Image: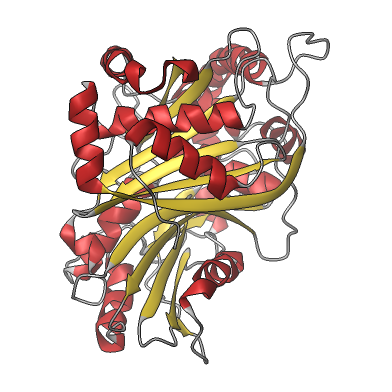
Length: 440
């Protein structure tokens, strides 16, 4: 959580990283989502899923955000025990229709302010199986936070969230929030310099001769399912880890998409590093790191990449980029913040976002009380209620989750180059891991 020397922060106050996510979501109208997907060959137990649905309100998802009545005030958490009814599709569909159904579920609006910030859906399959998906606003929880909430709900456990049931009335909260904003003004002034440096490093220079802007098209995504044993054996043989092996795969995908530095052909991988400790109530307990990877190194570069990643993580602090200029966030007008978020990235240093949650604990794979046949996460986006989903600047994202049997590599992009995304991901996986992925 946010820290202040000599003063303990209020437990319901959003940490700066969560305030940044909330303010960005409000400014753009675009809700980033964590989507958990399970498939059952035998069909899911609806009674077990009902227990799971109710239990979700007793963990990290049992809260919503209350905006400060002061325009420049910090937001706060309040408890939210409402649980939306599980949306069970009225007619079975073939397994080939699961991806389209996942897109439909991701498009259902979520409002972290009115709550609940999540919803659950079930798709009966015409072969007797089921697909189940939980969609969570990224403002409420990141990948590890979502996995924690799912595990606790699957075990029917609960945690006592230290939040009030209702927001404080404006006559009480406005003076409190204004006083906090005044105390943070010196920090906001210092943060302005940090924000300017970050913007210069991320926004495309007006006269950049180093690269041409990347053309974009519709959002597209795919999931490559890789045999976990093959992955582990390959990583050991190359002197790397499963993570560095997948980072090399991601670099190969970025290279095929033309999403590399034109100066040296390196893929700049932005790592989302988990910093969630026991009892951590932040929605997003992550910090960022960047590692350049030479795609031409191929499998032979995995061992060196392992050392480079280890060195980068060893020098990484616990503070994220929002901690550096968090006090400034609430002072920015929404249009300014939206313009900063949606500004084109510098084409001379395009960053591929990477987020590896890793092997999912057994409870995460069993929402209805029994193990699903497959379980994986993906990232998605939806519009806030009453808003339109505006096009995103160019991006490339890769994330992976795993079970004891397989690793699921999720790739999403709106880059127009590179050809068929499934073919690109499949070729990269085969070249680096020597595995044959499936995409069903």
